[in-house]
Image (cartoon, rainbow, N blue to C red):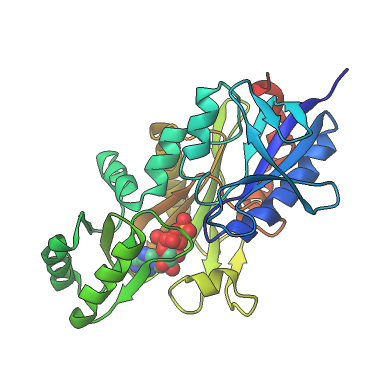
Amino acid sequence: MNKKNILLLCGGSGTEHEVSLVSAKFLEKNLQEIGLYNVIKVEIGKPKTTDKTFRLINADGSIGQTVEINSKRQLVGSNILFDLHYVVPCIHGPPGETGEIQTYLELINLPYFGCGPEASIICFNKVTSKLWFNALDIPNTPFEFLTSIEDAPKAHKLMDLHSKVFVKAASQGSSVGCYQVFKKDELDTALKNAFKYSEYVLVEKMVTARELEISTYEFDGVIHASVPGEINCPSAFYSYEEKYDPKSKTTTEIVAPGLTTDIVESMRAYAIKAFKALKLRHQSRIDFFYTDDGKIYLNEINTFPGATPISMFPKMMENNGHSYLTFISTIIKKDIL
Ligand SMILES: Nc1ncnc2c1ncn2[C@@H]1O[C@H](COP(=O)(O)OP(=O)(O)OP(=O)(O)O)[C@@H](O)[C@H]1O
Ligand SMILES: [Mg+2]
């Protein structure tokens, strides 16, 4: 029997391009272990992340020819043609977590792993996601959003109320376009800078909080939420450097210590509520703040969480009693054409 072809897409035009390559290696190893599929790897955004060309990754890891996915669900290049049966869009940030790739895959009726276009678009935009959290009665930090710099008075009013705020470009990840604002006279500069990254800008109350995250995923028709893990970031701002610099002092724990059962169960219930209502699919990492004065706030939903060997998502899942390999192989077997 011919093996089915799985296209593993990686890279992308975001700041997490390199992280995506590491996640893709881990996923490739897992997919190969299943033994039923040919895994074809394609990187988007080489040599520059702004380059949206799709390029085949050769067996030896080198970058190969330019390829395209056509409307007949085939991957075509100058001297290759593969029928595609499934896609794993292993991209953190654009154009994967932004829903663009999924929109095209829906259009050509090619099944894929992970969240659909609409859930991806909603969750990637920090403003839209907070509007949804409010509509669903899921607590999140008090905020205002700006559609242009003309809305700056809204941000000033919020700062008058809460004294310290976070300014965030709506459609960015990896803490890029995110600014801590401690003084009123720094606010306008932060807003202007954030508008360089996005058309919409979010301003929210700065909280003093622990950063907790939950692996939320579907397995055998049930939505599971792990107990929260924790990011221990010594600087109180989990910045781009803290996330990716080898000198980062940030540490992680698969099980956040010292939480009461009530807190754990409330967070898990919010994670499951968000997963169901936003129609997330297969997997998401849902991030929370647990403030010094005992409040739980949902911060954000990552629709394609990091899946490197040291990433929190697969580890929290394993700790919750499910093997990552069994998880992906069960989904793919069910979904594949
Ligand atoms: N309201 C807030 N109060 C205190 N700290 C905050 C607040 N919002 C964000 N932070 C800090 O900034 C970091 C980055 O913010 P956030 O998670 O919203 O965006 P992001 O990391 O850019 O998104 P992604 O995780 O998708 O890449 C958080 O991990 C946290 O350390
Ligand atoms: Mg974050």
